[in-house]
Length: 151
Image (spheres, rainbow, N blue to C red):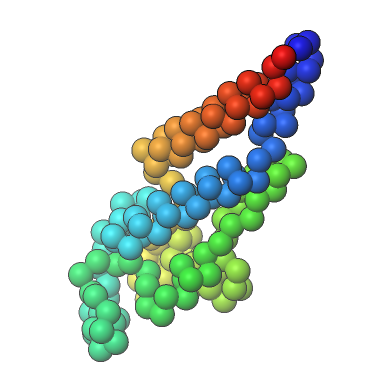
């Protein structure tokens, strides 16, 4: 097998929608679990406003940690798209009103105090976890692809 042929085979190994979908699911899982635990990228530990905490308590929701869950709409519409051509994963919300609400929490600030709780993205340790996963997944794919295509 010529070097050009090996490069072509390797290039095709990266065009794997299934791997990119698994990576996207991992990233979504990390973001959802961190947020559910009340942890945010900007390390904002500010608690709920007392009035809002009472509304949450009346609905049977916890009030000890801010987790951005009131109606389950936020992460219920959290989704991803895979662009196989550019090897890109785009995370977002599939409902416009939820995307707007998420932008208040993540970027502009929510509530009377305009509190920013940055949750869309990954911390440095989370980025390393995802990078290791990507290397592992594509490493297996490359090994398989090369072994399958070698004479």
